[in-house]
Amino acid sequence: MQSARHMNGIGLRQPHYREFRALHPSLGFVEVHSENFFNPYDAAAQVLETVRRDYAVSLHGVGLALGSACGVDDAHVKQLAALVERIEPVRVSDHACFARAPLAQHGIIHANDLLPVSFTHGALNILCSNVEQVQERLRRPLLVENLSSYLDFAERDFSEPQFFAELGRRTGCSLLLDVNNLMVNALNADETDPVQSVCSWLDELAHVTPPGFVGEIHLAGFSAQEGLIIDDHSSPVSEPVWRAYQHALKRMGPVPTLIEWDEHLPALSVLLGEATKADALCAEHRDALAAVAGFEP
Image 1 (cartoon, rainbow, N blue to C red):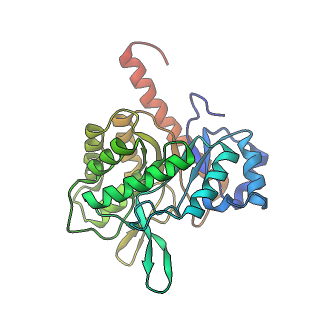
Image 2 (cartoon, rainbow, N blue to C red):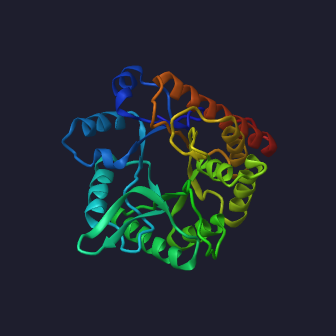
């Protein structure tokens, strides 16, 4: 289980199940995609219940579509609530996106994408209502993740950090801070200094939110495709993202951090090496804070 030097984790994916259980690595937690474990009778659910005996589990969803004006899917929320009851996860998260919309003669359709919300009062009201509904059903606060997005809206009432700060103030939710998503957005916006752009975003977030608002951090790799930087989780964490992550630790303190890798999965040892690097950076910041406070960690 989590220790002072092992607070970070990896996304546990099916190709690694057997080796992971045999190796039993030292990790703070593992994270899985919630929707893959809704059926309590399939083999994956049995694996997760076994893993849960030894590790904290973070449930990360992609299907709530919390920013959808037509509301959340009751059946989806019911299945998530049942999974939460079975697994007793350390955290439950999903995205600040919309994906559900009414289509004439077809009812509600669900897009196979995480579509961005606008940072307006109207979008915030919708997001708050849906987050509150899910939290009431789960009887726990959610973590809501910032998106990588490939378009922007002309209308805007808040900066993105202000938008999440207000969401947290109104609902009691926390932020799942995806540093890679911030870097993808900065690169696609052709920022002169993408790392500095991300650091400025983090500075603003720290200024407008209370301590502890960031409940988990995601780190991942990206790729360049047809002139765009794509958040595909298919490669090691890039050096610019590691630099931005160090700034996040400086501003937010050590926060449980996940290494995401979903495409072109590497050997399990590669994922564990990335988590170890995150652990080392967290330890550096923890030790620095302890030194400033005048005691040994």
